[in-house]
Length: 303
Image 1: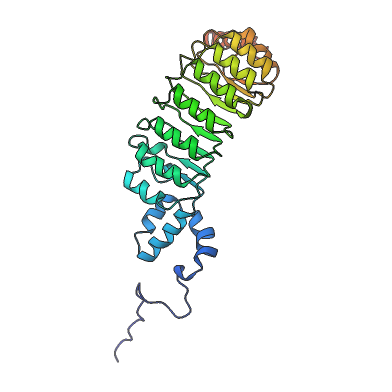
Image 2 (image 1 turned 90 degrees about the vertical axis):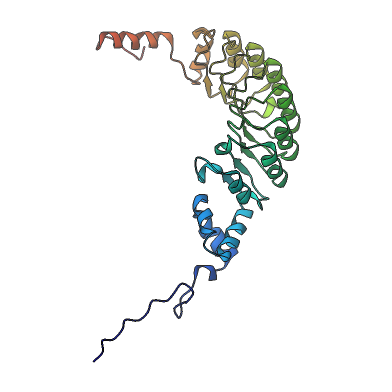
């Protein structure tokens, strides 16, 4: 008697009776909203290599993206990959491209901005190959922009910021960390044009920003909640006092390495519960004493 051969497993192109293949499920009602929305972008890039049908499915999903963060693809993303991912996207509301900072140019970014006028949040931190042209396209083509990060973009100058202030009426959060070309005049213009809506602003690591800019921000930004002045060496106590007087909504203030800011100007903000990143001098002295003594049970750090 010949031994009975085991049944053959269905091949990739065959289907067991009654089985349902993934691609047989409704794309727009099931796969796009309930399956592909949960798949990381990095895996989607691999998935679209499986077959033409999967490639079409992934492209349809990418065309409907509302949020795109290049960091989900990986620490570095090639120019060609970014172009493929965003080729059909026309409804983006959030766009973050920091991992593309080494090569992202105006030619790469401007067409994406033109296709996505609904953008509300854009992060371009460290994208040093861009120019004023890209910022102009963003300001002109995305009137609903609320949040923008230009941290460490050395090309941002006063003229570029003026264009942004003139054309972005909904702007609420702006990160200008280490935009060292900006001076008091540019920040004053921003405050006068868009101060009423600003809630968060970073001017950190800019030695050109001083009290004139901070005082104008205080007088024109009643809703300001977060202000980062870390390393703004020209900012002093006069600017901080004006913040205390005119910014009732302020919740956090960063003034580390602002050596001309005295505790007397910060005390009023501390009493209001504003989070400040430098400790009062007495607290600093007591901590130093503890470090030197090793143990000081008689020191009350709540003084």
